[in-house]
Image (cartoon, rainbow, N blue to C red; front, side, top):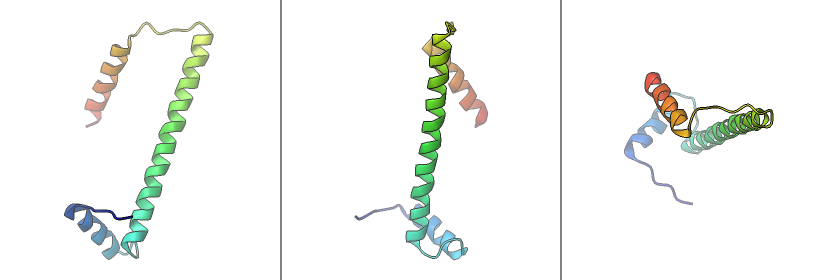
Length: 83
């Protein structure tokens, strides 16, 4: 497998190695891939939990009056506040 990275990313990797946090670029990239996989798993677990909660609420007859658009707009506003 061949991977091409930008000069900016190459500088980040070099600085991490120079700092002593990593012995070589392979170690850094392996750690980055594992971290990304863990973040994806956490997102999946949270999503699955929320879907399960929604199903339980629906089965109990609890429904939101908000539309999908209302939810999207609220999430966008929350993201804007976090920036």
